[in-house]
Image 1 (cartoon, rainbow, N blue to C red):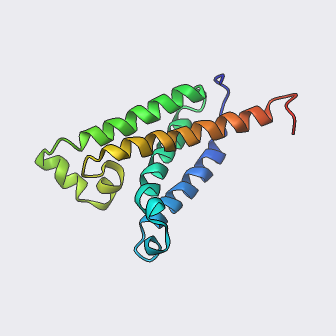
Image 2: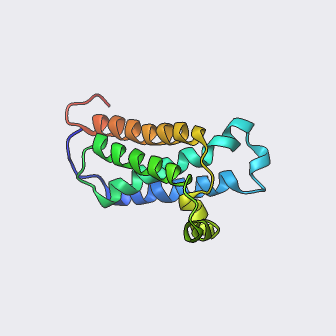
Image 3: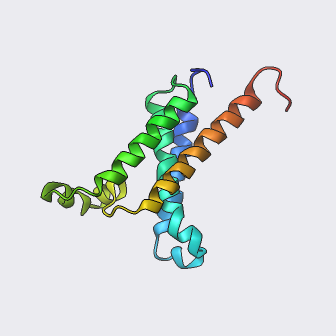
Length: 138
């Protein structure tokens, strides 16, 4: 996609919705009602989608593919950082915010979740932009 400007307002609204869904997917009252697959993977997938949305908010003129690559690179870096266990880093991970952002345990399947989450964001943006393009069928 070209580097046309994204709607920061729409992105922020989508990011807020993704945060709400992600937190709900981990909530003890909701989790038992989700299928095992969704309960296991939704949070990580939504986290990566959130990273993609935040990259788009910070850099609204970046092409979609670039925003997706940066988001995926960041998500992978966070996951691989979980192999490091410095005392200060583990202390940060024990806080609620630190755990939500950094996680604590390297899990290879999270890399798949991140790829799916960012991929969903990229796909949604490509489809949305194609529909909004002049001359596109509605």
